[in-house]
Structure formats: structure tokens, C-alpha cells
Amino acid sequence: MGGAYSALPTTAHYMKTYCVVSDCQHCEQHLTSILCKSSEQYLELFNLQKVSSHYKKGQVIFNEGAYPFGIYCINNGKIKLSRQGDDGKEHITRLLRGGDVLGYRALLSGSRYNASAVVLEDTQVCFIPKDLFITALKNDVVLSFEVMKLLSTELQRAELKITHLAQKPVRERLAETLLFIKETYGYEADGATLNVRLSREEIANLVGTATESTIRLLSEFRKDGLIELDGKKISFMNVNAIVKTANLQD
Image 1 (cartoon, one colour):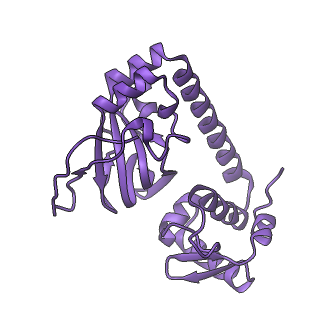
Image 2 (tube, rainbow, N blue to C red):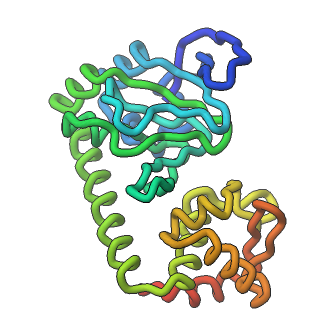
């Protein structure tokens, strides 16, 4: 999704910056975003009414517990959805990339956000107002079907994660999480280094284990020749061994 707002430079850390990007019909995510599969009529309306903003690493797009006023489409960048558990610790529920939409589940259910959206690296996001999105859903069969498919896929992933948390040992879950990160963000230009920087705590949150266990297992993976570590950089040295360690079923 793109935007038509002029840049408003700011130095405040928690201030978003409005920006100019391409229109929706020529968005770089037009092949992946469900919004770009809408009819020409609603694509044009999205293009006219959207607000395109730039967020810096660490900024919050929306907070857990807030009410939604629309949905967001990621033009480029990386975002994590996280919620605060009863133990007071952060629990990451999803990783998002360019083309993904967020905020639609709370909007459709009429509830508050059950997680916060936090930027992992500089990110460009387009906001679509609630009334326009709901109207499009009611009148655009293709868009409605795409949203249903997306909801079904997310439910499937959630059920699978619950099963793995109950049945898989932490070592297997860590290997599977590393593969999930690779699938989501890919590699850097070297074809081996994961194209995202996550702290050990963030990786532990994704795995569903203690940070200390994640640090120990990552060290074991390195000793076993599965990965290489350089600060927050993680490089895959033996993908087949990581897949085998994850014990993934075809």
C-alpha cells in the first residue's frame, strides 16, 4: 500500500513521520498484500483515504488494550506483535513483514487490541480507516474471501504452536523458530545470515522458554555446526541439520 502525504520531518523518538510512497495500484507489495487484491473501485478509495507513515525502530504503532480505528498494511519493514503476560514479561505472538496487514482481528470483533505492534527496524505503514475497510469487506467478495483465508491460516498456525508447546522439547522448538524467522524475513545478501536482528530475549519469547535456555541452546547449535553467532546476527551453516533438529513433519 502507498501514501500521498507529504513528509513532516521530526526528531522526536516517539513521533511517526508522514511520507510519500507510491499509490496502491503500484505498491511494491501489490502481489502479496490482501488489500491489493481488492477491486479497482476500492483500491482507488484505499489510495485516496489512506495515511502513510514512517516509524523508526522501537516505536509503537498501537498499544495492547487500545481500540482500533482502522487497519494497517506494511509497505516495507519489520514489526513484532507482542503482549504482556501475567508474569509481566513480553510474549511475541507474531512477526510481520512487508505486505502483511495488522489490526483487523480486533477491528472485526469490535474488541481492543490483544497485543502491541512494535517496529523492529525502520518501517513504512499505511493506515486504512475502519469505515472504508468494513464497507469494502461487505461489498468486495474477493477481499472478503482473502480475509477469511488469512484468518483461517492464522488459526491453523496458532493451533500448531499450542500443540508444539505442549509436545516438543525446547531444542526442537528453537530450531523450528529459527526456520520460521528465515521463512519470514529470509537471508541477507550472503545467503546465510538471517535478515533481522532479534535479541536473545525476543527469540526466547518466540520459542516459549527462558532466555537462559535460549542462550545455552544457541551456543550448543553453534558448537554442533548448525549456526554461527555474531552478536545479534545468526547465520545458518547447515540448514538440513536445523530442519532435522526441528523434527518437522511433512
